[in-house]
Length: 274
Ligand SMILES: Nc1ncnc2c1ncn2[C@@H]1O[C@H](COP(=O)(O)OP(=O)(O)O)[C@@H](O)[C@H]1O
Ligand SMILES: [Mg+2]
Image (cartoon, rainbow, N blue to C red; front, side, top):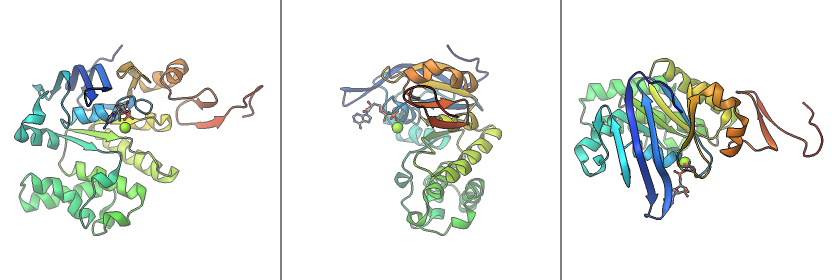
């Protein structure tokens, strides 16, 4: 299992984590992310995707195992505020719920929040905020209140709050969940463009339709294993129906036909009409 990686930027070694010491979320996770890679973490609800991203961002500390980032051991970084801050700048986590990330009176203030916390000079803050807004194509929304935005606009604003810190790694937790098809397409396109610029991006999702656009490699978390059960090229993973069925990413009656095509319902008895 696995793929040749030129230069590893983050690595998890035998990482396990349980909530309240009782509810296992990750069990013996081993994986590496290469510099400039776009990796999709595929897994059903509860498979451990969000927990994985929180560990990678240094928000929670593994119960056991190790986390390496940028050639340093950062396993216990949660206990060190200065190093934690540095990791948060270099690794930007965008939560599934954008309302967690948007709390200021305007979009501009939200996107400026991180850079201001870093104590950057005002002109640097302005430049980084402008660039992040431009990249997410929301410059025209800068003075709007976040609660006035549509779901898709909120997502783009939330990603901009991470981009304004010019992170080396971007972690996206289910970025397209609950978006309408057009907003989803716009967002996927923006993520794909970041990837083309060689940004390292890790996207957690259970939506097979976006996988090919946002990554070239996919790591599949099992439905109950709490660790990867496959790691390979996206097109290989998407063709492996048995794997996708066992990981609860497709259902035999709600079947998936090839990358970014369509999903349609099979007849329960007899053949199906296409
Ligand atoms: N705050 C929490 N308290 C207790 N258990 C949790 C908590 N958050 C997640 N879990 C459990 O950890 C497992 C992994 O969850 P999560 O990382 O959120 O998965 P995913 O993001 O893939 O849906 C699930 O079994 C879930 O019930
Ligand atoms: Mg989740």
